[in-house]
Length: 218
Ligand SMILES: C[S@@+](CC[C@H](N)C(=O)[O-])C[C@H]1O[C@@H](n2cnc3c(N)ncnc32)[C@H](O)[C@@H]1O
Image (tube, rainbow, N blue to C red):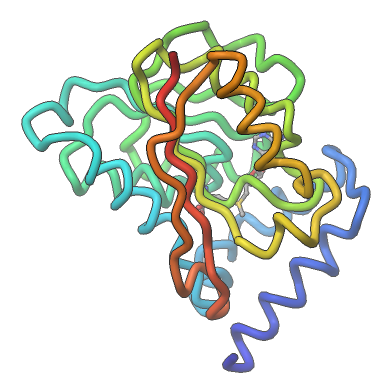
């Protein structure tokens, strides 16, 4: 791990300690927004590229311009920029931090923007509205809780795709996510969605593995 990678790796535990509240997380991102992209990139963050590649690999090029995509925990808009460069045109964003949202707006690639959290119903977002929901880096301590997945399924159209990219070790380190894969399975057993693919990928952040969950809503 390089010194920059080590710094960002440790910063995660410092800024988002166990039990971090929504308010703390949102405030931290608003303060961080002006330097977020530079800090994450020097720390070797690739999640936004992995997420866009995964979405693009599932959607033929001639359909990309007409599908509605929601970027969840959109931050400053890195995933949207990547999707736009792959031919997606109808991209909306959900992001709870005003500071991050302000920077996201400068990308010019998002149409609708929801200043909103997942995990508490996300009531401002309509049901069955999106063909693709993508979330990179939204599953961390104090971020999207397991019940946020229910919101994702409600928002996505039946037949639509949900792509979640996160750091693999959080499935063991973060209390909220220790049962996440079991929760995913239970939603499949209930007939809410079906697994398309789950895969580990190298170099998600600071040389650590990521995991990409791809599900189809039923
Ligand atoms: C690590 S950043 C990832 C940003 C972007 N997706 C990327 O890949 O660069 C995590 C983002 O999740 C947002 N967030 C935190 N809690 C959330 C929640 N409950 N629902 C939705 N977004 C949340 C934060 O405000 C922050 O912008």
